[in-house]
Length: 315
Image (cartoon, rainbow, N blue to C red):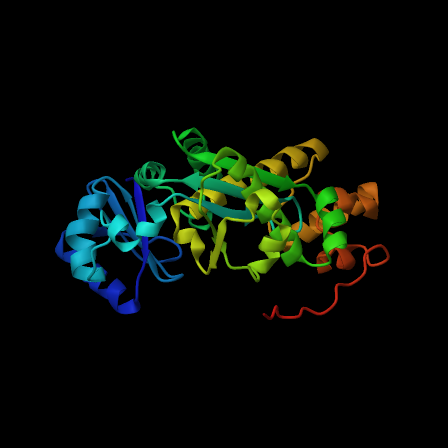
């Protein structure tokens, strides 16, 4: 294990600072942290956002098991994953997506099959939710591990902007489009692992959206949606594969047109979109961006209508 992260309460952060001081750690300033400390080859950063602790370096497992868990968290988790979350080690698919909140780029939906051996291999490799990984290089390293782990099965459906815009107009809302994409990934995985009994994803809509989109081959699988599903190793692995495919698309297509295609809907993204429209016309946005976003209307109001006010999804 070369990294470990866990949320902390304010009181726990205070106790951890005192423990580190008592253990001879040296403190140093670091941006966005409440404190940062090092000793030998182990670093401990407690970030303001959360707050949360990030351990990096050598000796992480020993520190977690003998210091952090018993004295700060007051619970034993590391090494007891199968006791606390036995379902994570049972055969199932994990499904996740990337790009749904980004103006530029595709919507990517990925799925990963795990059983006990695969889940244990992912755990030992440090696989975690892609949102907790700040480095694109690390995303690519983890993606390679996932794709080459014996016993794992993966599938990726990448819906490029042109196809995405057509499908969005057909379905009329993002939840239906997501349900269709999740269903396609599940069907593709079932062709590789036909006996898999369950598929897990983050909760984005009524599970019936996926059920309706499943073809006959997938009608018998049990669908499960829950908030924070990315804590599951299969879903975390899927999030990494989806993120890698998404960032690779942005890099590849950006280089092809000599532009930086950023993530999200930032001021830099809007500026890049303006330059794209100036150079190639409003129609170019359909090739590179999700034109139902309000950003498309802001950049080219004569070509793209303003989206209707958001309505909360209700059961």
